[in-house]
Length: 123
Image (cartoon, rainbow, N blue to C red):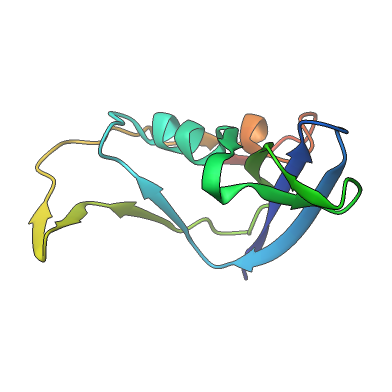
């Protein structure tokens, strides 16, 4: 019924990579800065740098290091449910984003998959 997300963390010192796999029933996508569904998926799977006070403890280096983290879809579900985060919370106030997010009648997830050669299309 659901799918699996892959979280990859790579140490920037020794290049050691770790992966964890978590089941999901839906994907929650930030849409504040995204005009399309594909841009929201790009933001969700974009590599981010972990550093400063939130440094990653590398299993090989045995110390806190700067690292990169990236989500990808490892196993896509037969039916994909997407939740668009349309509310913001600031200083105990909730506001709704009044913007349009466009999407087509089909969705190609291939570039968001763990295996770049995997073909995954929803129609």
